[in-house]
Image (cartoon, rainbow, N blue to C red; front, side, top):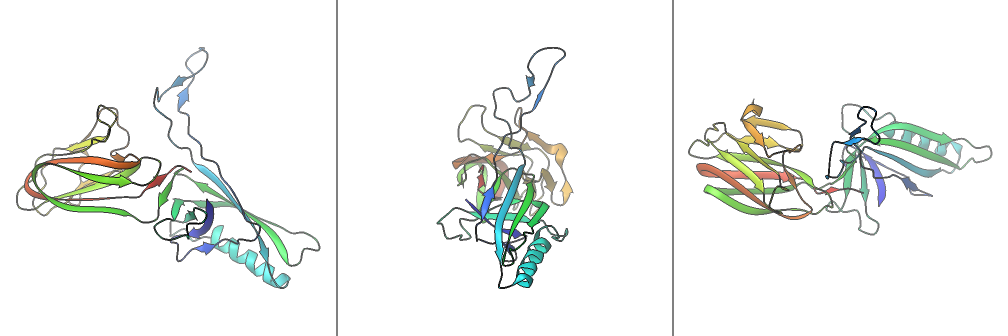
Length: 275
């Protein structure tokens, strides 16, 4: 994987140099444990489940070249301004792509990131090249497909099953919006049935949603709203769940059960990767 750019979007981002470029990052999982009294070892809060991803520290290094020292200095200043001096009014991201895939919108991935260190090595006699190292902190610990995936369909009353696909290698959080058309919606349940048993997530909403009003349950931001009114009290998750709803890697069988005469289901997510 090549870490290629940094910025709010691919088009508007800063492009890292490619001469003698090197990427240094490591995926890790975050142990959640606690020592108990004077006992040996620790208590594992996750039991037989896997730990969540830990934040990433990514170092991008490359060599700046120029026709004279002023050119080199300008390149270093530009790199510093675009990374360490990035404006705080935008959420910056690191963009990457697999080698040989052409870096198309369909294959690019990103992770939210902030620059925390910038190093440029001044070396006597090295007038036309300078080594630059830039360090980033990535709080999510995951990478996401740049292209947002969408599903939009209208169903009749009752239980309806459909397929959503996560092309990544790690569970992807999925937002689901439901809009009743002609009658009130007084009950709604969304389930991921992919593996059966107790391994799959679900949520149930028991509030009343009026016709043409949208119930928004956003697992990515932990936000639940009936129209534009927060409605957390009416939302119930499956036993032991922490994330609200996710898609396993590959195809997922999703079932929505709701009681209005007809209703629209709108879902969106990003393919998710642990790299």
